[in-house]
Amino acid sequence: MRKDLEGVGLPGAGRPKGSQNKSTSEIRAAFQQLVSANMEQLQSDLDSLKPGERINYIIQMANYILPKMQTMSLEDAISVEYRELTKLLQTATPEAIEQVTSKLLSIKSIEHEKI
Image (cartoon, rainbow, N blue to C red; front, side, top):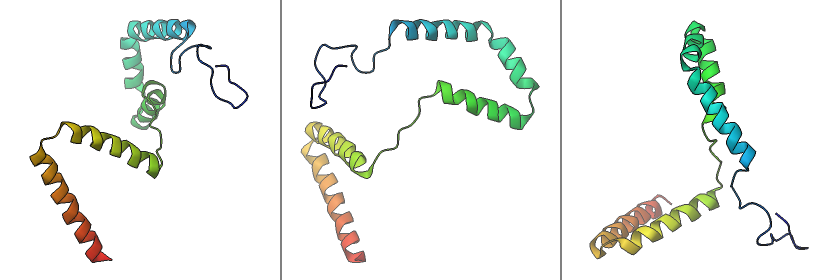
C-alpha cells in the first residue's frame, strides 16, 4: 500500500489488507489436492515412525496448518473485553444488567478488603 509523507495509507492503492494474491491461492489449492491425494501414504509414513518422532512431526506440521496465536498486551486484552461487554450490555435485559452489576460490586468489595 502506498503511504503519504506521514506514513498513512492512501485509499485505493494495492490489495485490501489480509487478502491473498492469486498465486498464493492457487498454490494453496494445489497443495491441498496433493495432500488429499496422498492421505493414505502420509498416514502410513506417520505410523512407521517411533512415537516421539511421530509427535515431533505432527507438531511441525501443525505450525504450517494451524493459525498461530498472537500474544496480546494487557491493554489490548482489556480493550477487547470492554468491547465485548459493551455489545453484551446493549442487548441484555435490565435484570441481567443488575445481576452483573451486583456481582461486580461484590467482587470489588472483596478485593478492597484484601488491601
